[in-house]
Image 1 (cartoon, rainbow, N blue to C red):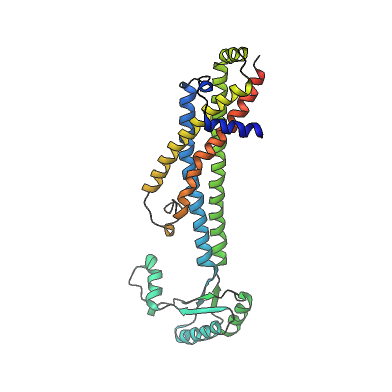
Image 2 (cartoon, helix red, strand yellow):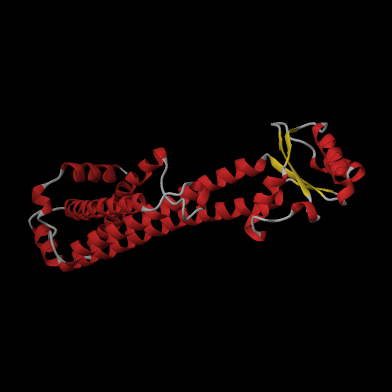
Length: 301
């Protein structure tokens, strides 16, 4: 652990003499920069997906958790009587508040996407809807159903639970998928940096042998490779993060009401989360290069 801390300090401080151990250009340098930039770009979108799914799950939970609907069906001559009885039951049920029957215009607006704007509700046996909210203590849905069955046989209670569970499960699944994608992205970045470090060490095997002959320790050589590849990864990740943030900012903003994909983006302090991507990329590159250099230098004669 102390060795890792010391190498991290050396990366920040720098050592011009040690930097000359690692070639500043070449295929490994370009590969590390490109891989870090590409993975950071993808990480920004994976992070945006996770946060958007979390916001959507919270919004669905808040909107559907305390709302419920009562559907009253009855013959035309008995509709008003059954509606009044349903209102009376709801208003006397503990835990129920904000009882509000939908007007004809409101019901017509709900049915308009399917039947058009000129639906004659007066001549159709359309059930009447009553919306209500529950208080913080909640109400007993089973007891309410028994009361409705006895006093308003044509009433059906929908407490939105059967709608809320699959929606929340879908949003939670998207959130888990986003975080899993982040883990895979940084894992792939570590693998690519490790391969690039191995290739660079193998290409400079003779230089490493000469350095050992003049007294350079394996820690000194490893620190040079770790510093160079870590800084390359941070630089590439910073570029990819900047491009990813710009792409997210330019996406059409329809708010969270449009769904997960149309609401993809960052809100408020969530814009600070992507700033961690270059730091995480640097940490992954540091560990991957450290493990690779320790393994390769131990195998070199």
